[in-house]
Length: 118
Image: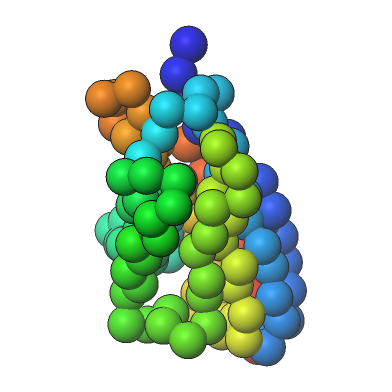
């Protein structure tokens, strides 16, 4: 069975940090993304990591302009991707979702809530 599980959300004050993790039920995943959905708005792209085609190749990463320089996506191990979020702002509040393509199937996690207070 293929699935994703996010963790690491919580409540912090502005300027604080959180690290989100996304764990897949399989190691055969290559495109990982984080999205978020602020209250009352649509889901929006946050960051994407594409694994190098070979272990010696670097991963390719992209970020939304709103999080560049504050968020870092990285590959923790074969089935886990992290999103380190620093200098959090109230505008970062929302439900954060992980998306990955595993064994040719696009998967979404259930989400983890991030709340940043001013």
